Amino acid sequence: MAQTYAEKVLSRAVGRPVQSGEVCVADVDFVMIQDINGPRTVQILDELGAERLHAPEKALIVLDHFAPPPTLESAEFHARLRAAGRKFGVAVADLGMGICHQLVLERGKALPGHLVIGTDSHSCAYGASGAFGTSMGAGEAAIALITGKVWLRIPASLKVSFEGSIQPGVSGKDVSLALMRILREDGGDYMALEFGGPGVASLGMSDRATIASLAVESSAKAGLFPPDRITLDWLASIGASPDAALIFAPDSDATYARVIEIDLNRLGPQVACPPSIDNVTDVCDAEPVKVDQVFIGTCTNARLEDYRIVAAIFKGRKVSSEVRCICFPASRTIQLQMLEEGITQTLVEAGCMVMAPSCGPCAGLHSGLAAAGEVVISTGSRNYPGRMGDNSSRIYLASPATAAASAVTGRLTDPRTLEVVIP
Image (cartoon, rainbow, N blue to C red; front, side):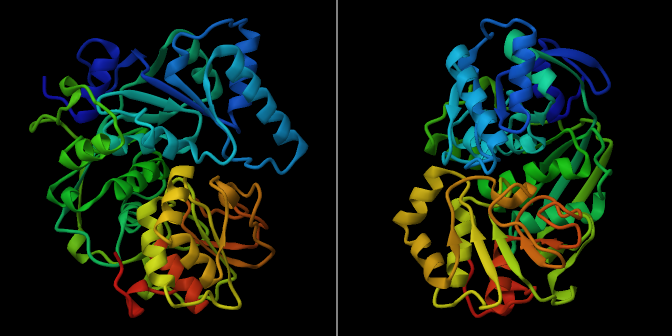
């Protein structure tokens, strides 16, 4: 029976060979809960009378969305989650530690062949390292914490084949937006997007995490990169030891619901214009709108590789006097690396506000909301009206390179037009 990569991962979790369409109960390898849906998860645990969890060492509580808490209610959420961590013996990544998905990845909690769930929609980010990462609600997460199991329907797979090689000034965010241009917001409905092809070799782990995390924006269940040498070298660099028996590839004759090819050689910087993430065009063809705020951060684009690009653009330049530029590293580890490499100093000298690791204003919760009619260039994941502030504000989603270039010029700008070598 030929299988896709997703089917192979879930076969291991179910304990027998499975194919798309089956409804199965599967073993969970790791559970992440954050501070938006986490309080409801803890409430359900209490309502069920849970006194112990199946494997508390295979769970993580992350305080990242309301970090630091901007309201009394969110402060109470955090107190409740800290108490649950103490009661059940679950590790808590407290304020300033970082964004949930980055922490799961950099701590080696999402390994090839594993099933990892999270109470955040972008939990498909774990597919960057070859795990089947997917989001589930508070109830499913609570049951998984108690029993170590969840039920799910095995998704059909959609194959995305990358040809060529990613070009200078282009990154994983541009690849993701190009894919959204094709799939739209419902083209991956409950599918597993499997990324492959010869062009994968030109995509580093940061690019892969961006692409995997944004799979959900096409309504996909997961986005997966079968592990290769790049995956294994990165896992070794963070001290993770994947099970060699779980390093596998999809069968060559596996059946896919659809196959999409993207030529990376021909791909330039992309931008998702309001009001939706699938309203995508080439930056060079977009209207050079005047920008009020640039937001560089979120689980999609706040890693060290992203900030190296941003620093290269800001080096010797200043943020436009009419622009506010706010930067949120994805984790404390990245924050420290930025300090060591002098990136933070470059950003501050350019006029950026460099904040502590958190989700920041991505979901419109705090630290940089947009006023009525303002234009925001964001490296985030969503741009529907009201996402980051007033309903009349307009959000353009772009790569870190495009965001930084736009902060310098004060208008939506193709980063390739600046005289700079972009890493």
